[in-house]
Amino acid sequence: MVCSKFKSPLRILGRYEEGQKDCEDILVNKVDVNEEYKEAFRTTSFTEICSKVQDHLASKSMQIPSNSVPLYLHLFGPFLEPGQGTLAHRMNEGFSVHPLLIDYFKITIEACNLCEILLQSIHQIRVNNSIIKAILNLRQKALDSTFSNIEQCHAMFQDLALFANIKNPISAMSLVEFHRMHISHTAFLHRLTIRCTEIQRRIKIKRCLKKMVGCTNIMAYARLTFTLIALTFHSIVKFVAAPAWFTCSFGFPKKQNKLVMIKASSGERIAAQLDVAAKGLYILINDFNTMSRLVMRLDDEIEHNKAMAYLCSRNGNIEVLKAVVREFRIEESCFNERLDELEEHIYLCFLTINRSKGLVMHELMHGATRTNM
Image (tube, rainbow, N blue to C red; front, side, top):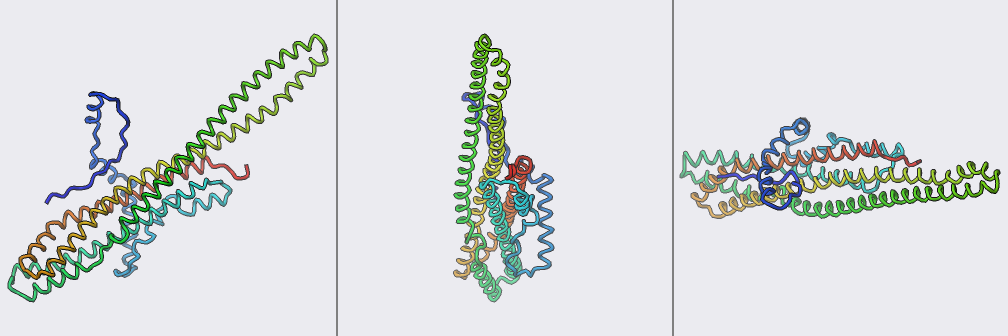
């Protein structure tokens, strides 16, 4: 059975000019998505986060009983870089943080929580599949050896009925939660973009005002120069007092220009911070769209397997039973590959969150303004 893996674009291609030459460029520069994913999964940072999480899970699994549900809850907390307390520490030190950036950090925490829930669901799916796999292996041996054993077949029907009644770990929250987060993230990205555009527009206006003030000063200086030259012929005293008057006249505009420059640089820092946050959120939205499609496919396959198990248990036909067991074995490898693919995307999404948060914190630490300024 051919197992087709989900593909999603990782790069945003630039605009190309119309014509045959551009079509050839697109074909030449076509992205191999599978190779890009493999390269991303081979990076040192991705390997480190996977090893850290798996080591953490190994230690937790030894301390927590197997029937404990919150195995993955707060899993990514120790590996968040920067940690959740870093922002609060910076704010306590007197750094001013834009409210939209605070909302952005809240969104990243919410995204990490959803990733943890998905990992918990994957863990529960593997537990369910391992149980049914062990049961089916034993029953298949019984079918091959003693095909006429009615008791063994009856036990297999009961096991399939039990598997059909097991709750799907991802059906309750996956699609609804992904849809809700997609709407909220898209709306927040729009807010970030609008706010960043407004700040950049204000910066341009301030620069224009600064140029206008400079031109006004030049015109005033020229006018004052001609006036002083005219007054020189009438009074030497006025000519001697002119430099002092000139200095006093231009003292306030210089301070005003300096004030405009400070405000403009502060606006540029805020715009840079919001721009980095918007880019990170855009990548996060794309990653979550990819994961939502993977989750949807897994949900369909799980429901399909449960439906087959239910119909087989209700039918009670041995030939149908053998066909269902054979179908489960054929689909087992493909299903496990999709589980692994979803898990890899979850780790990759968490790595993206870490990197984007680190870039935003870098902008805050190197460009934040003091509240007492």
